[in-house]
Amino acid sequence: MFGVGEYTFSKYKVGISGFYKNPIFSLLVFEKTVMMDDTCYFISFENYDDACIAMLILNSNVVQGFLKNITFLDSKRQCTKKILQRIDFNKCINLLEINNLIDIEKRLNLPKFVNKDHYNNFKKLLKHDFQRTLF
Image (cartoon, rainbow, N blue to C red):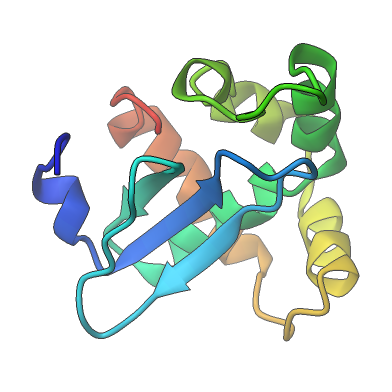
């Protein structure tokens, strides 16, 4: 194991396999710590609400389109750390509204959860705490 830190033991993570040809980000929530091998990437969160919002943003058409434009479909590992670190959550929230996130929930067949307060709290997190490295 390498790259182990406090983030490794967070209860809430949003992860992706580096091998997915169609990048789907998943919300990973378990009572015990979830470990992933070096073919996966994740970002960790202190609470469920922020993790859920991040997962919805990452599965938005904005991010999915961006990833399709900067990756090579024929590569063995389409999503790499270098690719994923190019995602800018601040730019994403400038392009997405709460209605977009609600539509993503529906598209992914997720139970209705997200609301305006969740999204506004995530935006505040970005201003104060999201200078850390993603993925």
